Image (cartoon, rainbow, N blue to C red):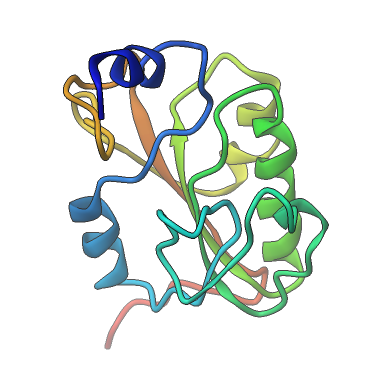
Length: 151
């Protein structure tokens, strides 16, 4: 990535923040991901993925185990709503999100999920510097999921 591309990458000129591979690998050891609904052919984390042209917001996520790192711009609320609604229909959706606890979408949807706040600031794939915002892993599970204590 050139200096100009890096400057754009860490500015509001882009809403795409590629997932660090180490973080995805850690989550993959816990979740058997089958779908990446917010991908490009170059950064897809799953064999099955949707690009911007295929518009993952309009696709059925079924009973997939989804890894979602959505665009962080104005449409993020739609992606988080889709993640929540898809979980209500049977999908498990694991999201990498900016920890924007002051937003309506956070309180409407994220507060219903399992939230794992990440310490420090992530350095996203291809970035030379850490992000200017904190991040969280948010897990939306189907209503039938129940955490049970082992006997």
